[in-house]
Image (cartoon, rainbow, N blue to C red; front, side):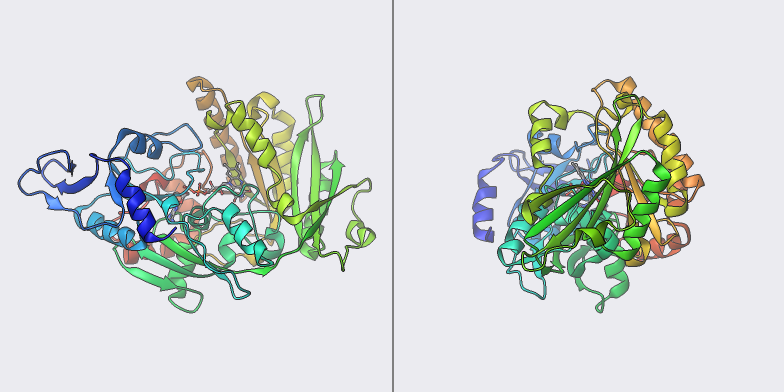
Length: 482
Ligand SMILES: Cc1cc2nc3c(=O)[nH]c(=O)nc-3n(C[C@H](O)[C@H](O)[C@H](O)COP(=O)(O)OP(=O)(O)OC[C@H]3O[C@@H](n4cnc5c(N)ncnc54)[C@H](O)[C@@H]3O)c2cc1C
């Protein structure tokens, strides 16, 4: 969307509640409907608007978790990247907290800013022309839109998460793991350059060769150092066809061994897995892998399945259908209201050597009631494919992601119980070298964060001091308090 049309759209919304300045005495915003008290600090001219209307504040105080709600004092509806720079500079000067908000699919308040300003990144969603050397996309573009734009040109980002209605800036701030991660790393490992606004209000372009430390800190940096405004994404040739292989295991040890084998030899394009209820109160382990191909070069089933547990069920689909495969399920969940109930999600990474024992133990006690029939994901990826300084994975070459994507009724006692279970399971995982995926709903103290980053904590703090010394950015992660 061009700036001009954005501007006119924004001018038409929220009339009468646009913010015109900040009252430093009351530490509150002055809207155009009020008489500005003496001393009001005027807002810089914006292409978009800073708004304080109840619907905007209400939306920005929620996320997909429906557990934590922190209300900002204003929401920036940016009309341009310049607006973000102006807002962050302004906030920096006046000690106002700022959080970028994509689709807010975090589950524990990570994109919220109590008493601060939330930037609705979705309004900056332009996608440039995809070429073999990459594509520039604005941070508010969804991965679904990126998929459409790039596959039209015969190209694709190497890694998608299971769900594509998240923003590029959102997943690049947290990680973005998917079935191609055993080959290509996470989404944060497939970025060629970033345009960012640092917490202290500088517009910077960084890349693996230009300010590389900053680049590698911002990717997976949980919004602590900068707002990602645009990203240049790596692209590879898009396949057209996908052959899917599913194998059901009853033995977690064998499942983990086969996952490890396939993660290391990279025989599949995609490798995931999950726990599936066996109908008798227990769980089976579903191995799910796929070979991406073009019709002139079909995969060799026998070679792909060699050495794995026999009994694969094979299915053919198209690349786009595969990447968007959970859409029908999501539509159904939305239609029955399950998208807007609490989601106390548990997401961790496990060292490969401990994965079978840990998940076997968890599965022996996990009930469908505790999952709310949400998916339980469990699959391997490779540490040597990771490039971020901020993203934390266990210290082994083959790691596993383990997620219990819980859905619970909106009953505070049940939600509290699930959160307590998450904390308990996290502590058991940490004791064997596991790490939290910070999108999850697991209570975390400052001490937990220090342990989370381990020897990287020093660099993380140093980068914070260099680029967001006043601790303006992304308070919802709860890493730095002040
Ligand atoms: C159904 C579903 C399936 C999912 N599947 C996967 C999966 O397969 N793999 C996976 O890795 N994740 C998965 N996720 C989690 C998802 O990737 C993360 O929650 C991600 O953060 C969502 O992006 P978002 O745009 O909603 O980010 P938000 O939740 O809006 O933001 C995440 C964090 O980044 C900050 N932020 C947002 N935008 C910016 C920006 N431009 N600059 C700086 N900071 C910013 C926010 O303040 C917040 O702290 C799934 C989530 C859902 C709901």
